[in-house]
Amino acid sequence: MAQRVPFIVTALGRNVDPFMLHIYAAMAQQERAMISRRTKEALAAAKARGVRLGRQEIADANRGAAAARDAELEPVLRELSHLSSRAAAAEIERRGLGKLSYKTIARARVRLGLED
Image (tube, rainbow, N blue to C red; front, top):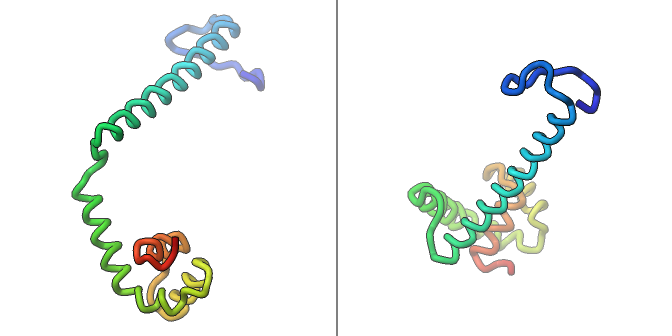
Protein backbone atom coordinates (compact mmCIF):
# COMPACT_ATOMS: atom_id res chain seq x y z
CA MET A 1 0.00 0.00 0.00
CA ALA A 2 2.81 2.42 0.82
CA GLN A 3 4.28 1.88 -2.67
CA ARG A 4 0.84 2.39 -4.25
CA VAL A 5 0.82 -1.11 -5.73
CA PRO A 6 -2.79 -2.15 -6.28
CA PHE A 7 -3.80 -5.42 -4.68
CA ILE A 8 -7.04 -7.27 -4.18
CA VAL A 9 -8.32 -8.53 -0.85
CA THR A 10 -10.52 -11.46 -1.76
CA ALA A 11 -12.85 -11.07 1.20
CA LEU A 12 -13.42 -7.38 0.46
CA GLY A 13 -13.54 -7.36 -3.35
CA ARG A 14 -11.84 -5.31 -6.04
CA ASN A 15 -13.31 -1.91 -5.28
CA VAL A 16 -12.54 -1.63 -1.60
CA ASP A 17 -11.54 1.82 -0.42
CA PRO A 18 -7.84 2.07 0.58
CA PHE A 19 -8.95 3.77 3.79
CA MET A 20 -10.87 0.62 4.74
CA LEU A 21 -7.76 -1.46 4.07
CA HIS A 22 -5.85 0.78 6.48
CA ILE A 23 -8.57 0.32 9.09
CA TYR A 24 -8.47 -3.47 8.72
CA ALA A 25 -4.67 -3.48 8.85
CA ALA A 26 -4.70 -1.38 12.04
CA MET A 27 -7.27 -3.71 13.59
CA ALA A 28 -5.18 -6.76 12.66
CA GLN A 29 -2.10 -5.17 14.21
CA GLN A 30 -4.03 -4.41 17.40
CA GLU A 31 -5.38 -7.98 17.52
CA ARG A 32 -1.84 -9.38 17.15
CA ALA A 33 -0.70 -7.24 20.07
CA MET A 34 -3.62 -8.38 22.23
CA ILE A 35 -3.02 -12.05 21.38
CA SER A 36 0.65 -11.66 22.26
CA ARG A 37 -0.17 -10.01 25.58
CA ARG A 38 -2.77 -12.66 26.50
CA THR A 39 -0.36 -15.46 25.59
CA LYS A 40 2.45 -14.01 27.69
CA GLU A 41 0.10 -13.48 30.64
CA ALA A 42 -1.26 -17.04 30.37
CA LEU A 43 2.24 -18.52 30.22
CA ALA A 44 3.33 -16.47 33.23
CA ALA A 45 0.24 -17.60 35.17
CA ALA A 46 0.88 -21.24 34.26
CA LYS A 47 4.51 -20.90 35.33
CA ALA A 48 3.40 -19.33 38.63
CA ARG A 49 1.12 -22.35 39.20
CA GLY A 50 4.13 -24.61 38.69
CA VAL A 51 3.10 -25.99 35.33
CA ARG A 52 6.04 -27.37 33.39
CA LEU A 53 5.65 -26.36 29.77
CA GLY A 54 6.96 -28.26 26.80
CA ARG A 55 7.73 -31.93 26.23
CA GLN A 56 9.35 -33.10 29.42
CA GLU A 57 10.88 -36.23 27.90
CA ILE A 58 12.80 -34.07 25.44
CA ALA A 59 13.81 -31.65 28.20
CA ASP A 60 15.00 -34.55 30.36
CA ALA A 61 16.98 -36.02 27.44
CA ASN A 62 18.59 -32.64 26.72
CA ARG A 63 19.43 -32.19 30.40
CA GLY A 64 21.00 -35.64 30.49
CA ALA A 65 23.03 -35.00 27.35
CA ALA A 66 24.27 -31.69 28.78
CA ALA A 67 25.28 -33.38 32.04
CA ALA A 68 27.18 -36.08 30.14
CA ARG A 69 28.94 -33.48 28.00
CA ASP A 70 29.75 -31.41 31.09
CA ALA A 71 31.26 -34.44 32.85
CA GLU A 72 33.37 -35.25 29.81
CA LEU A 73 34.60 -31.67 29.40
CA GLU A 74 35.02 -30.80 33.08
CA PRO A 75 38.80 -31.39 33.23
CA VAL A 76 39.33 -29.33 30.09
CA LEU A 77 37.02 -26.57 31.30
CA ARG A 78 38.89 -26.42 34.61
CA GLU A 79 42.18 -26.21 32.70
CA LEU A 80 40.83 -23.44 30.47
CA SER A 81 39.06 -21.54 33.25
CA HIS A 82 41.40 -18.58 32.77
CA LEU A 83 40.12 -18.11 29.19
CA SER A 84 36.93 -16.41 28.09
CA SER A 85 34.11 -18.65 26.93
CA ARG A 86 34.84 -17.75 23.31
CA ALA A 87 38.53 -18.52 23.65
CA ALA A 88 37.78 -21.76 25.51
CA ALA A 89 35.37 -22.83 22.75
CA ALA A 90 38.04 -22.12 20.13
CA GLU A 91 40.65 -24.07 22.10
CA ILE A 92 38.31 -27.04 22.58
CA GLU A 93 37.66 -27.09 18.84
CA ARG A 94 41.39 -26.76 18.11
CA ARG A 95 42.04 -29.80 20.32
CA GLY A 96 39.54 -31.79 18.30
CA LEU A 97 37.06 -32.22 21.15
CA GLY A 98 34.11 -30.94 19.17
CA LYS A 99 32.69 -27.65 18.01
CA LEU A 100 30.87 -25.92 20.85
CA SER A 101 29.46 -22.44 21.01
CA TYR A 102 30.71 -19.99 23.60
CA LYS A 103 27.21 -20.04 25.14
CA THR A 104 27.46 -23.81 25.62
CA ILE A 105 30.80 -23.31 27.36
CA ALA A 106 29.41 -20.54 29.56
CA ARG A 107 26.37 -22.62 30.56
CA ALA A 108 28.55 -25.68 31.26
CA ARG A 109 30.80 -23.58 33.50
CA VAL A 110 27.78 -22.37 35.47
CA ARG A 111 26.38 -25.92 35.82
CA LEU A 112 29.78 -27.17 37.01
CA GLY A 113 30.17 -24.30 39.46
CA LEU A 114 33.22 -22.93 37.67
CA GLU A 115 31.58 -19.57 37.05
CA ASP A 116 28.80 -17.47 38.55
